[in-house]
Image (cartoon, rainbow, N blue to C red; front, side):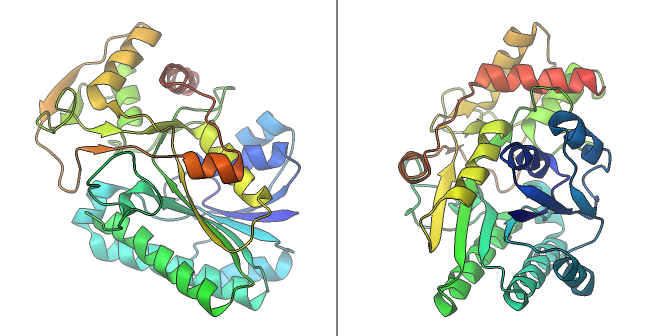
Length: 330
């Protein structure tokens, strides 16, 4: 079975590609490399002893994407590609709407034309907005607090309408929470350019001296210690969730949360990172970021019951593997 992975050189896409190759799938990656690196392809091969087919194209270029479908006999698609920084989306919303929506529409049109009906879509817990109760279940009301989340919610609505118009589509929407961690080899992990938007890469840049101090955005949230609480999931567990979704024999339009079901505050994560890696992380409290909420963690009962999804890794594992990656690639 040949799977097209959009954004496959990115953080989650590359780890999922490794898991797909280990499970015997053929993989075709499409990535424009604006927030990823080409050497990821070599690292994937080193880990798996298998190669992928790679096209450096932007999904917003429909004709180039169509050429990929012409050349490759695609059976299924896992769609990761998109801009993904919450704070940046507030600053440049039009770019987010244009990129994330146009790229997805192009992909869906190509899938229709070439009769590719199986899709796993990378959505986000941001579609739940500021939840009234926790843990968050899949049937909770949907709303968003930032343009990034809104693009995810819009795409979910597009996919629901597509399925309604053509029930031969088999669509899985995965709403995942906060991926951190890295491959056990130390070859793959999250290392964005510049000042990171996500917490763990920020911690890593401070721990390795690339940045002087970690900014913690707000300590007046209604949480255990005043800092934001999130559900951190190991990227390896997340990758397995995508493969389980491909293997799932239940057809239709399905929606699953992928997390651990446990919340960890920013300060708790920093302290855990310091203790397991025996290193000090300098931090300071700064003002809240627009669009951030108090707390967010998942109910994963549905994914467990229908997909057999059970997270294997702890917060300690996530901290150790993240630091191991950055030490190997510093």
